[in-house]
Length: 349
Image 1 (cartoon, rainbow, N blue to C red):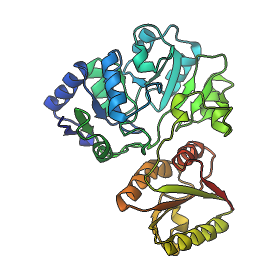
Image 2 (tube, one colour):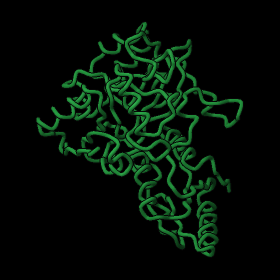
Image 3 (cartoon, rainbow, N blue to C red):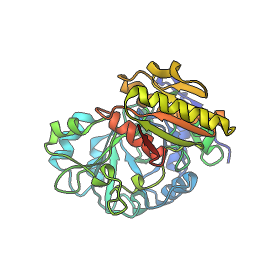
Image 4 (tube, rainbow, N blue to C red):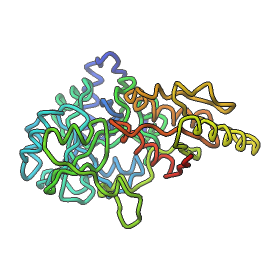
């Protein structure tokens, strides 16, 4: 298969290229497209065979549900048993945007799309190319991140091409994404809304709209007996090729510890990468140091996270050491991704 790449910069795309992408999706093929969070790998959500192609292209476990992307609220009403008052309030507050809601599905979305579950995950993306694609195709599009399963999520079309060239039909290249981490997932299928994946929209923001909200205990506590409810949160995710370790603690002590680790790894002949905040980037004694942004700029850190991990892949480093980050605001979502990328390798100093 030859993967076609269509440029969609400045939020504009050639009419005939968009028509081709739409024909692909309607005929059961796969189209990667930009959203405000990360690039999605899209297939017709109502077509079981298209969903199977998504799992195959990504190498994704088939019990890991796909998020259905929609352009109109009426499409949500069309695929779920009941649209709760909480769902309506959250849609009013955050759609289009980086919030995914889980509700009880009806029979219009096949189990191949929902990973065998009786619930369906839905969101309305806030990106002009994604919105145009969804509206003009008149399709509900199942779209996980457009990367090989387990790899850092793609925030540029190049990342998609590096992972999926020859495996999918079309990539719509809309440049770098705005947010850089996946949507918040909130489960509305039970009595108390529950966050199954932290993201750009925080628990506090959601609770201001619908009242009490809880975090899935499996996200908070690392315990083999307390597993995350969302199947996708149970798998290895976001990981660079090199072994990543997070060093947490008082700022000066973190720098000292990372310098010790750099020296030790270098003596072993290993090539070292360091993920640093802008304030500390000149404090390290060796290795390839990449600044991920200023400490108080969570938006920039989120936007750069997956790019930095992939940059270290391109540099062929053997080990990566990263500073930890504040977990307030969207910092919790950033650390969730970083901890999973590190395989929970954390050094406290």
